[in-house]
Image (cartoon, rainbow, N blue to C red; front, side, top):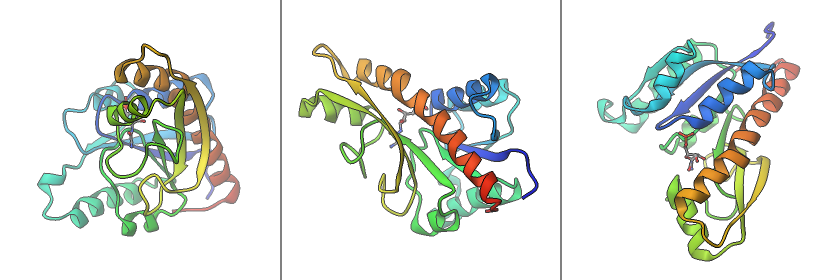
Length: 207
Ligand code: GAR
């Protein structure tokens, strides 16, 4: 691969604050081995699409309900990835579980940010605010975020980076979510993206 930067696709479903953290990190030079060149959303109303447009990044919407099957939905995403020469796929609040077929197509080329310290509060059913509700219900005093490779097991791939965040006595799921995002997710996701982009360039691999 004769590229100076790895091409990154970010898959989103909602607000896109993690996408914004990647855009900002690229501007600041924290990410310099990769460039966000495509945003794919499964939700046409996602604010993340507005963030992409403001940053001049190409975007696409693939809706599950407009596809005849889950296979067709994933194939459309896979086609966008290959047609755009993408080297690294980042799941940043992408609320759809990808099949084994898809994850094998892009082995060690998909990473995800999860709002807890895996293996706590992860796997099927643990997403968004539900993760923080579960952490508070359990009464843990420390939580955090994890960036990991994506394989066929939900939140089960190799861990790349983690950061811990203290839980406060007066936390609500919302206050905890905001703190975990600010102190952990928006810090370790850009660092992980830089690390894996660098590794992809160094290994001279292509999807
Ligand atoms: C983030 O907290 C992310 O970690 C979480 O959804 C939120 C998306 O926010 N992802 C999961 O729970 C995946 N299991 P964002 O759209 O503002 O980045």
